Structures are given as C-alpha cells and as structure tokens.
Image 1 (cartoon, rainbow, N blue to C red):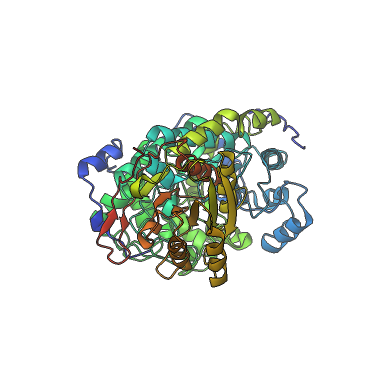
Image 2 (image 1 turned 60 degrees about the horizontal axis):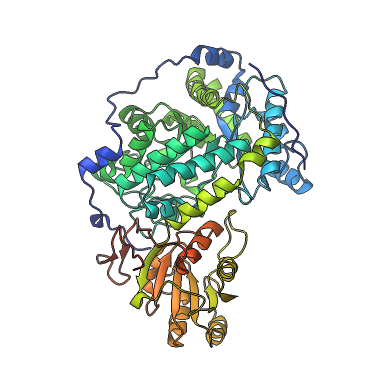
Length: 615
C-alpha cells in the first residue's frame, strides 16, 4: 500500500396517514426492483483476503477502536486552541485528535461546527490530512474514515465559501431526480476535496407527521415513492463523487412527535403501514448501493415487541435490515449521546447491545472510555466474540477500500481551490434553488414585484439561529438581495416571538412602504408571529409572507397578498426566493407535503403537488 505524503495547507398536529395514498405499484417502482431478500448472506469480495490479513494483525484494542466514530475538538489534529484542548481533556481524556487516535485507535472521526472542526475549507483539509498522518504515522495500515452531517438546508456543518445547496424538502418541492443527483454530486465532490469521505445524508425518512419536531424539512416529503426516487438519486450522486452516502434513520423517523435527541419516540405503524410508508426509501437505497445506513433511536413495536430502540434491536437491524432487505453494507448508529438510546440502558450497555443487534459503527458516545472499555470487556467475558467484531471491521474496511483511502487518504490545496465553491457549482446551486421555491398564495396576481411599482420594501420577521450555510440573519439576506435587484429595502428583525413593542415598531416602520415582506418561522396557534402579520395587514400596506422553514405556516395566517415557501433560510434559498419575488425566476416548486387546516387537520388546504405559477 502506498500513501502520498500529506500536503501542508497552512494559510405540529397529529399524524394523518389517511391523507397519503400510495399504490403498491408506485412503491415497487420507487424501490427500483429491490424486492424482498429471503436471506442475508455475506458474499466474499475481491479485496476481502487482503483486508482480513489486516484484521488478523490487529490487537483486540485496535479492533475495538475501529468500531468507533468519535468527535474531537479543534481545528488542528496536533495543535488545537487551548479551549479545545481543555474540552477534549474534560470529555475524552485526550488533548488532540492525534492523541485520540493513539489511545483509542478509532476508525472514524466526525466533524462538527461547534467542535471547531470546520472553520474554512483549507483548514478542514489540513485537519483531515493531520488525522490521516496521525493514524498512518504510528505504523497502522488503516486510514481514518472522516464523516459529517452535511445534509444541506437546515443541517449544514461546512459553510461558505463551500457551495450551499437546498435541503431535502426543498429538493422534494423541485421534484427533479436529476437536480437531487446533481446536488449530491456537488456536495460529495466538495466534501471529498477537504477529506470528508462519509456523509450522513440523505435523509430517507418519510415525513407524514406535520408535528414532527426533529425531521420535518430534513425529509424529501410525505410520499414514499417520491422520497424513494430522490434518495436513489442522491445515493448515485454521492457514489459518483467518491463519498459514502448514509441513508437515515432506519427503520423510519418520519412519524414521530418526540425528538429522539431528548426522548424515546414510539412509532405506532402496523407492519403493513411500515412496509407501505417507511420501508420504500430504504429499499431504494439498498438497491442503489448505499454505503451506510444510520439507525434511529425509536421504538417500533410492530417490528420488535421488546420495545428496545431500533439501534439496539436485533429483530430490526439483523432480521429486517440485513435479512429481509438484504443489506450487507455498514450500519452506523445515530449519536449515542442522544437520550433516545440512553433511556432504557446505561452508557456501558448501549454499545455492546448495538453490536449484538447488528451495528458496525458506534457513533459519538458521550463517554468514549466507558463505551470503549465496555466493548473490550464484553469480548473478554465472552458476551461478544472477536469473530463478531471482525465481521463489522471487514465491512468498515471494505468501505474504506472502496473509497480509495488505502491508496491515498490525503487531499491537496490545489484540489480544494479547484473544487470547493467553484463558479460552476455556485451557478448550479442557484438554478436548483430557484426550481424549489413554492408559491402558495398570490391574491389578484400581486406577484411578481417590480422596483417601479413596489420599490420601497420593509423586510421583517424571524431571524432564527443560523445553520453553517447562512452568512447573516434572514432579514438582512433578504434585504441585500432585494437591493441588488433595484428595490429600496430596509430590515427590521422581529424574531420568532415578537414582543408587543417590536410589533408596534414594525407597524410604524410599514408606514409609507409599498410592500412588507415577513419571514415566518414555524408559526403555531399561539405564536406572536400571527399577531405581527395581522397587525401589518391592518395597516393596508400589502403583506407578503415567506415561510423560511416549514411550509405549514400558511395555514395559520390570513390577509396576506402572497405567500411563498423556501423550506430553509440559507442564503442560496433566500436569494432564490427573492429572484422569484421579483420575477427574475418563475415559481415552479410544488408542495412535497400536504398543508392541513389549523382548525381541522382532516381538511387539506393545499395538497401534495400544489403550487402556483405566474401568468
């Protein structure tokens, strides 16, 4: 095996499944012929003999380490800032990423913005090279698999100047598999250029519950067949870019009203409903050659009556995923620090039970020493066998080999400069985003706006915490975009819960304006955002609302002249929405989820596929 020397780079409401109708034929077509596997058999592959020799030379400690994917603080593998050293010592007991690899032999590292891993593309690339140097420089023959959650939309770890793209529900609104494939290809190429070779995307959950607090716009939509098709397209795009895609969260997190970060959700679908609603995107992913599948910390009694979370369920992970769906790739847990997986068992039991269930990678345990030693002890006590560990390690090494990490795990400055945020990628992102913006209300053909007739615009509304892909508050981004198109625009941030004083300030600021543009964010029945919109409508100045996250906001507002949905508030989506508002692009997005009446959830106000166009 040859390794090139590293290059220095320093410089909602209850679920309404009855609203969804999917024919068996459509589901079968979306699954692209995956069918039902009658038995799971691990097939020998050309590289397996070489990879088994590597495994045979590993100590037990090294084998245990290969199963873990761990966070680490800092922008550098060997010289992080002192605050990050302190955080690493407190949480992991090591100072740096290099020490993490030396002590625990981890097979993977996950990057987070909050862990200060992702300042800019050149820094990320240098960190990736430093991690690989730390792994291979100590005599190991096994490179590290570096991962992150770069879903785009509202979950984004690598921000500008990397190319930011519409998220899943926006792509669902666009409805184009070609665009979904192209978006994944762009995302994958840029991740690979900075050394990230496993992405925890695409989300394969079918969001049939408007009240879902954790999935929502991270899903492509509520139609299993449509979601399956877009998942397939994204898997293809990532694979072509040389990045391992990860479909999540198996067996399906789309119909929960509890966030598994903070509790343990239960899915009440029958087995038949699961087959119809949740399974198709995962079947499609398997058929498309998905590299890894992430588990969900959810209880699905129809699939496992023990009520263990799916992450720890052998009937679900081995019985359904491995044997019934015929999947023999890498299975990775969702983060093991989430409460959903910790409510029933202690942190020392969770990793052992996950491995017994059929997991291959243990992601980000809260206390690595506890989890690592628990697996080691389980092998020493005979609860787990080394052969069982070897099965998972072989799958992980197969993935590393397919990605070319054994040949050359390093990246270069030239590659970063050539690929990340290049002009072609940025232009494609803009075009894709324009095709996702959805026009839901346009009373009297009020839109599009023009500087001649609507030159003075007041922009108010929510400025939620920014995903990494956002350079500023939404009100500021919208205002700048309007000014660039010839409008006189001013911004006034009123927040997600505007106070009475702030509402009065917005009403006063609306005087003399031609239009008020209000960015809304997850409007509820008791939300003060409703009061804000109503008061602005009462001024007589035309009001346009822009739902910058969930499209369901429109069901709780009235009196506005127009409403659009962007499905996220990153710059690429907001700027595309402004171009649509100004008639520089036509609204062609269509709802990928139904919008129900706020007063009567059985009544659908705007069905799947709804969207207006300009005359």
